[in-house]
Length: 186
Image 1 (tube, rainbow, N blue to C red):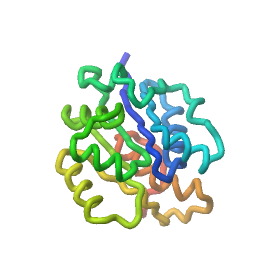
Image 2: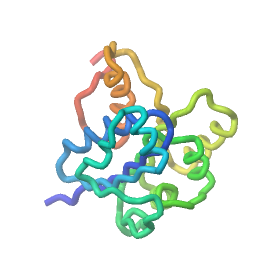
Image 3: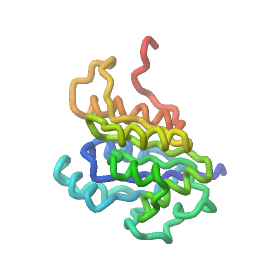
Image 4: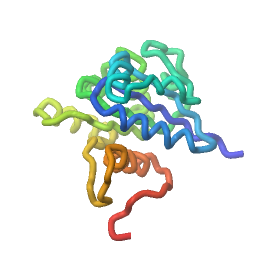
């Protein structure tokens, strides 16, 4: 049997919990994956405020605490191949850009970058200031991918979920999964 894909999904306290929920819902449908889930304290508060639930506790993924440096993905030897931070606050992005590994989330991102694996940051802020832009540049130069939480409207979405799904579909593409989604002129 093929080894499972190992993925870290980290959720910060930036607005946009719906993006994390839709991604986790999608990953829940896949076989042969191992997902480590990490939510900041603020992420839980924002999730509850925006979505009115604590559904993040109900996923069949391993849920890790922010300072659990015994989590497997705190080391490159565990061979997690992809990490998605969704949504990614500018504070988190800044710490990642500057190599500040002061919690499990930033340590995991540092590990993914040093191992030359795939780091996807779903940046959620508007407008950007020059510090944000420079931090995005640093992450990009280090091998990370900045995927702003900027929805598209080609598919003519009708609901908030459909709008948010346009961003999550791009993240799923970047993660390397084949899936059905709107494709321009296809």
